[in-house]
Length: 328
Image (cartoon, rainbow, N blue to C red; front, top):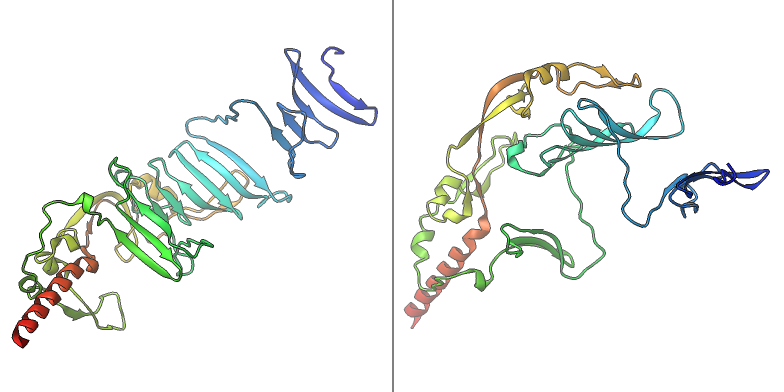
């Protein structure tokens, strides 16, 4: 016991020291703070647990294949509602879940999708990683803030392996710019002598209102499939395209509430349950939802009006040349 030196300090101020291989490995000091790999407390006075090592450090939590590995954060109360936050790994679906204020707020699914404010998404595993944000009282947004007032990138987009950005969103003072690649080093077969006026006259600008707009407010625009015949690179998707999704939960409006959910998971998810602490856990799916093995969804076309700008500019130049010739 003397060689192990389990107690250090005065008769009224003891540290409990744990040693192995003739070396101190853990210490609990008189203030009740535990230290592993060090005899020095963390710099923050609230640090009750300090781990230090000259190399790599880690902690492993193991459970059964159907169990959970969890770290809970208490707000010093006890009983129901004690845990204000948690970090959990769920073996059954290989997801990582983050909770605060007693409720799950963020989930990282096994395929890499990040869900914020929701536990369901239309993103399938085959869609790759992505982010789904649930609305909160009709508000759904993402803030990107910086103190810089100079030209600053806020988001950049990459594909391929050349490490060159294919697009970006940036701010400069009070303005926002949406960039797409335009560097001459990315282009070939560049020509300047082509007929823009004839193509421009083929476009069909129209006025319409959105079906979802109860006010029927008329706005200006194009029908994507018509514009695609003139400027195909401005339009995404195919006319009347659809896609079949498997194992879907469908709400009363006929829209999908979740994908890749088995009928058994949907049935169980409609029930209110209790967690291991006896707290009520709300049902995941509304009782009036339905489940279908196959759901056909419409893949809507989109248009980027900025791709029409070169056609407009070239047409104006051609018209200017004709006016100048007539005035000569």
